Image 1 (cartoon, rainbow, N blue to C red):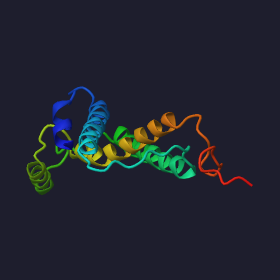
Image 2: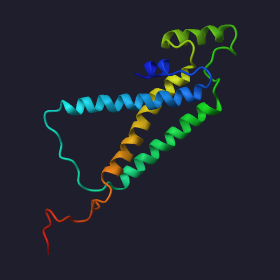
Image 3: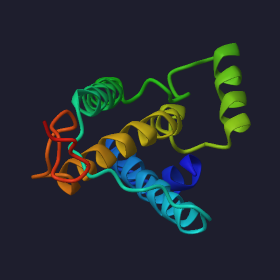
Image 4: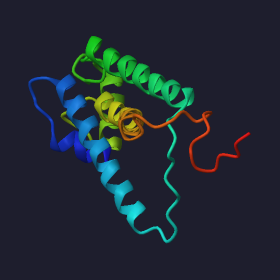
Length: 151
């Protein structure tokens, strides 16, 4: 999936833009596949009717910081994976790696950036979705009107 999105949406002008677009398309493909798998489940879990706790915010922070570091490094070093600046043995080794992964016109970092960035972006977007879906509901530690023992 990462190679497909990296090869389909590759603007030649800006490889960083190619990485970001491929990450968004990869996250969209993950959501479509997840929705397909969710729809064929025999037993569906009961939806949570409580607001999320601190674990969701911590997970979203980890995903966001990972994306910022990953995309920031790629933005700072865009020519790191290209074989143009090598000569001799290193050029042959780099060309062999390109042949192994099947990427010839994009740097290998775009492929790795999509493979590592799509799960982080999907986690961040799904966390935002949960926040919007559960807005206005009671906290997880507050007793609700249902199932209240009273007293």
